[in-house]
Length: 428
Image 1 (cartoon, rainbow, N blue to C red):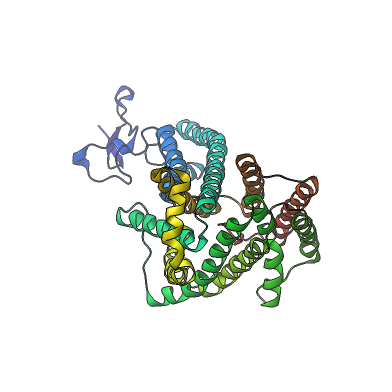
Image 2 (image 1 turned 120 degrees about the vertical axis):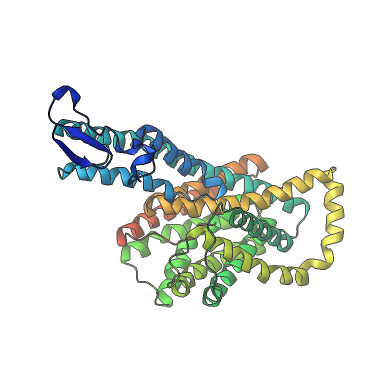
């Protein structure tokens, strides 16, 4: 009997056809025959592995699980398929070349199956992002209507986000980045501008309708183009400058026709835009050496440092009024638990929608994210108008539509200018 050791896991007998023994699946190697290339039984069923990968990517988003490791399984499958294409025998491949062709066809079919799964995943990501944003805006406004102290509420929202990140890091649900003195120093500037952007938005929410604040905040691209040009961070073609004209026109028309117009509300939204634009510009400069830190961890540390910035100032600005304001809020709402739930929901969903936007940006193209962000403003504006029944004049609605359409044109113009991922405000 002539025996050839083709693979350590099995022997091929050539003397008698009926006794041919092939390694049907090298991954099912007996325990006494050494270690295999991959963990035993990992790819028993390619559809199961694909489903597990998709589940980890989709349902991991609300809780901070990384979507990246699951894709390594599919990458490994692709490598096995590439061995087949070169005529080499992959692990688990039979000696018959026809079986390799069939195996390659299976992989192609698997990639086709993954396309609707990718669409479903994208729909879930955007759905969660929109839902969390709507819930935040509704309960944030409910609390501010009863307890008009935006400095304390903004501090509490950053506190909830900080605690949330510490829980994820403590239970290994999110890998904690390595912290060093240069990293913390690099975060001081972006965190300061983030603090300015966040508290200014909260002040605006407390003074005017939520819909009006979002219309004014849609003018952020205008400030981005102006400040980036002045600071020498970027240059823009004529098409980008033309795209911001409808934004200016629409916001101006919405402002002069707004029923709930308040100068503090307008200035709060505008200052918020400036804060977030400067945060983005200086983040690119100071954090250039820390690209290994992903968006979620970066936002987590920015939230922690922002809390340290904001809370002491909040005590100075409005701390003396908190106790009296609390009693008035409890008296107005009737049940203290209702007020507590509203405050907690505003904090939790503030962090969740920011987290979802950062994670969405990791998995989709800049253009898709930008269009999705534009549509998010439309959804939030419509939802808050319906919930709070804010009166909207026809000219006000027209101005809002023009401004939002301008942000869409801006996203189209900037996406043609550069294929890089946008770093616009992901938390507005």
